[in-house]
Amino acid sequence: MLKILKHTFEEKFGAEGDVRCYFAPGRVNLIGEHTDYNGGHVFPCALILGTYAVARKRDDNQLRLYSMNFEHKGAFETSLDDLTPYKEADWTNYPKGVMWAFEKSGYKLPSG
Image (cartoon, rainbow, N blue to C red; front, side):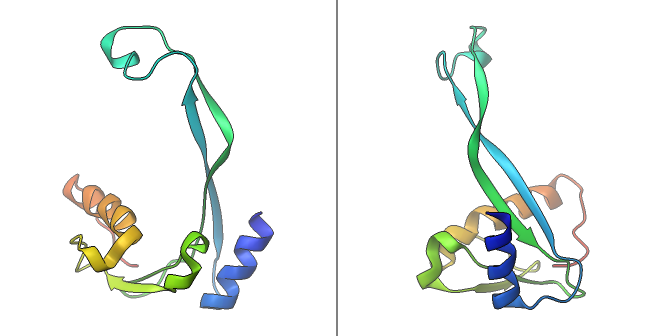
């Protein structure tokens, strides 16, 4: 899967620079939802299904976001100066929201 993702990234954004790949496994609770923070017992486990990301740091504050899950929507462009959610931003409101929360927590994002 990572080979396919990296190839797609390079087709869309070019192969130059330090291209990095990431994976975050999904998670399921086999015993109860909303139980762990209420003092109950849970049995969480990681899944082999998850979220993949391929990224490369930029020298400016621009962001170019693309999802193979929404190929028909193409690449979405914005900047670190505009992390406000809006309807047309569609699925990109989530990663923009994560970046917004990092900055509100004191982590400076120096570039896109």
